[in-house]
Amino acid sequence: MTSASHLDIHRERMIDEQLIPRGIHDHATLAAMRTVPRHLFVDDAMYSCAYGDHPLPIGSGQTISQPYIVALMTQALQLDGNERVLEIGTGSGYQAAILSRMCERVFTIERIDSLLVRARKIFDKLRYHNIISRIDDGTTGWPSEAPFEGILVTAGGPKIPEPLLEQLADPGRMIIPVGDQFVQELQLIEKREGEVNIQVIEQVRFVNLIGDHGWAG
Image (cartoon, rainbow, N blue to C red; front, side, top):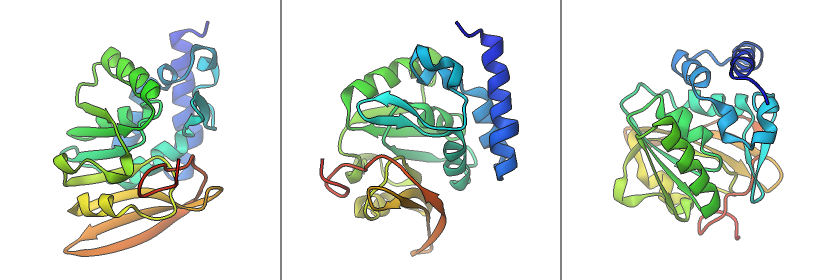
């Protein structure tokens, strides 16, 4: 079994070798990545590789994203600590946990019940009580809690779901992978004074965004 101190060393190496050299410079993002125990969000058998520079399977055909991609997407939201953030695709729960250390409240939606049950247990264990979750079609958002100053989508869709754009606050920022089912562009959408601007950050590959405004299941 990997010791806690050994895992702490791996977490520091993740910061120093994977994130900072690739341009992750936001202090809050780095602090959250340093604080949240990523190994708790993977199976016990994968503890030793939890901080590696790659995604890992979490069951049900889903993955926990590579640490750099989690940090890149988080940094792009430019959170100051007062936001309400909507996450589409809870998955392992790691991305929601990172966001929860950086904003007022996280609302996260997952479509696979078993994944959300496991993630909720980890949130409770860590006492991350500002994460609110539910099972639903994430492409329709969470209208009753909108608007959101930040929206982060952890699956790739063919287009930006219109409901999510409508639920993005003004000003607000959304980050989402958009493309086909094999490769996507990581897009940053900024809404300000009624205008919407889109910036492409880099090419990525995510699992499919399933739902009414995504890919068919």
